Length: 319
Image 1 (cartoon, rainbow, N blue to C red):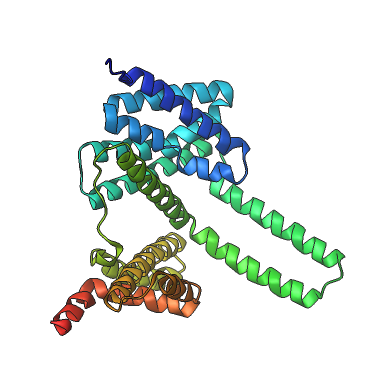
Image 2: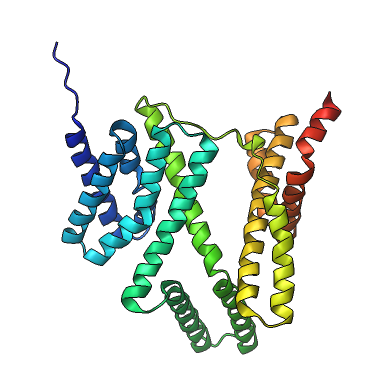
């Protein structure tokens, strides 16, 4: 019996075609397009794991050229710069069997770098900050909505109060633009890691896995980062040093976000110990995450857990 093995060139062509299809879906389909953009790096990861980095780079370049011909050059370049580094780094990490944490961390760095490259390209071409442009679009959308409410004869005081709240929220969003870029990179890296690892296991490949969520322990660096950020917020605000204030404000959000993740991991550990069912777990997670004060308590608990390691103390009490 003759075995038919797909050659790297054939598989590269098929996977490159898949990236083009995903790019077209991302460009033309409103909701599905967001999902297509997030999994755009999947074919690149699979190709690198199975055949090497060289084939992955060639696939990204070929896909970029085809997308430029079928769609438009600028859109093609944005897709390649935004999601290409994620797929290349994750595929390289999986192929060389890096640990799960190392692979995800480096993929996150590559993803954020790709987003920064994309925004830098748009700024270079248009001389307009793309994030500020998005904020302007959101502001115009809110203004149009409030104009409709006024025409409908709704209470002017209520509309004015809503405008004030939206204006305050937009001010904070402007301050948090760097943090938003980081969140975009985290989402991209997280989806790519989860989807790619599952697909590769289905294909019979061995890929490193992250430890169980209840065992996650982030470094104490984030607790110290919070302290420096609070000092920076005070100095920047009291002395009206806007760049320092904005940088410290974003670092504060990074530290608090890390505390939330560590806090959720600690919650998962506690619920494992008390054998809480899946439905109740989802209820507790939602209850905490949807409560503003509870999220802050969770964040500080997670940050101090990095220093005191409550799980080790729980284990000592159990023994």
